[in-house]
Image (cartoon, rainbow, N blue to C red; front, side, top):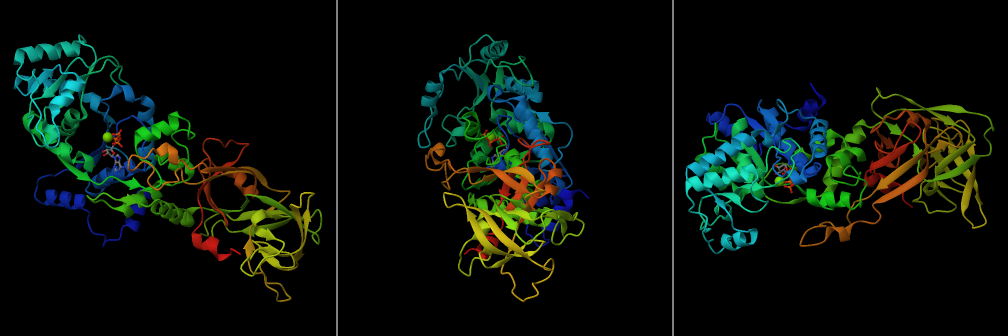
Length: 567
Ligand code: ATP
Ligand code: MG
C-alpha cells in the first residue's frame, strides 16, 4: 500500500458521508449511465499550481482512485502567448509530488487541434458557425447585457461556401490577429450570454510550446474543453462553479458535433483561502515584480511554495479532505491548512534543538575541557527514530528569550537565583548576568546542579520549566527564516482591493546567527524537523548547500504550548 493510500484509509472514517460528486458517480454507476469513471485535471500551463488547484486535483484523482477509474492530466493549452514549457514541467512535478499518477501519457488539448478544427468545419458546413469581422468593441456592443438581448452580427448570414473559404484563409495566415473570428451560430437573444454566438476560433500568430508554428488560429476554451473531454472518454468533467453558466454551451457543442462520447460537466465550489490570493495572474505579478523569491517562495500559496515551506503532500491532501466538496462558496480559514501540517509534523517530524537568538551561558562549576554525551529521543513516542547525541560543555547557548534577571512566577525559564532544566540534560541555576557598556546582557553565569540528568535535584528544589540549549563548542551555525502571512488583510483582493497594498512588510525575518545541534548537519534538502519549543522547520531546497544550512519555519507550535510558560 502506498503512503498515500494508507493515509487516506486512516484519515477517512467509514462514517464520513458521501459528498455530492460521490453521490452522482455512485448513482451513475448503479443506473448504468457510466461503467468506467474517467476524470481529468485540466490546468492551463500559464503559471504554477496553487492550493486551490490541489482541491481540484484531490477531487479528480480521488474520484478515479475511489471508483477504480482513471484520471488524465490534460494541459488546456489554447493560449500560446501566456503558456510555457516551464509551467508544463512545474505542474507535472507538483501533481506527482502530491502523490497522484495520471493514466497514460500527459495529454494536451493541442493534441486535438486537427480534430477540433475539423469539427469547426463541420459546424460551418451545418450552417452553425460563421466568420465574423466585427471588431472587439463592435462585438461587445452587439452582445447585449444581462437584461437586454444582443443583436445579430451583419456577418451572421454568410453562405457556407464563403465561411469555409474565410476560415481556410484564417488558418492559412492570410489575416492579422483580431481581423476576424469564427463564431458558433446559436442565439443572440439567449438569456445566457454564453450562448450569444460565442467565439470558437481566434487568430493568434504566436508560436505554441507544443505545436510550434503549425497553427495561427486557436480554439477557445469553451470550444476545446468539452470536445477534448469527449475524445478522452471523460465520464465526469468536474470544474468550478464559475463554469456553471458555460454548461449549456458545453452541452450544445456535444449535441451538435459527431463526438465519440457524451461527457457531462459538474461544478463544485472553488477553494478560497483567507490571507492569500489564489489567482495565477496575481501570483505571477508577485513573482514578476519581485515581491517574492519566485513561484516557490515559502510564503506563496503555490504547491511548490508550500513544499519549500515544509508542507508535506499528505498534509495538503488531508486539508483537502477536511474542507470537503460542496456547491456553496465560502472562505476557508488559513488556520485549517496550518492545523493539517502541524498535525502531520507533530506525528512524523524528528525532534531537534536549535537556538534562534543565542545567549551564552557559562557553567562556572563545570570543568573546562569536559564533554558529556547527552542522549535524546528522535521523537517522544516513536522509538524507531534515531536517538540523538548532544555534547554538553561548560559553555552553552540558550535563547535570549529564555533568560531574565527577574521575573514573576509565570515565567518558567531561567532567572537569577532560580533553576531551570536544560532539556535532556542537567538542571542549572543562574547566578549573574554579565553586561556590555550598553547595559545589554551578553552572558549568563550559572551552575550545574549535580546528579540531575534524568533526576530531580537531591535538595528537593525542583525547576519550574525546561528550556532548550546547544553546546557553544559543538554546534552547527545556521540561518533560520521565519515566515508570516504574505498579506495583512484577510481578503487582500476582495471588493476591488489592490492586493499589492496589503502585502505584509514583515512576512520574512531572517535570523542568520542561529546555533543548532550538530545532528542537523546531516539534514537533507526539504527534511522536516520539530525544533523543540520553537516550531516546525525544514531545510530550504533553494539556499541550503552542503556547507550552508538554511531552515524555513513551516509553522509554529500549538498556541497552547507557547501560552504555557509566558511570564
Ligand atoms: P486562470 O483560468 O485564471 O488561469 P485557474 O485557476 O482557473 O486560472 P486552470 O489552470 O484553468 O486555472 O485550473 C485548472 C483546474 O483547477 C480547473 O478545473 C479549475 O476549475 C481548478 N481550480 C482553479 N482554481 C481553483 C480553486 N481555487 N479551487 C478549486 N479548483 C480550482
Ligand atoms: Mg481556468
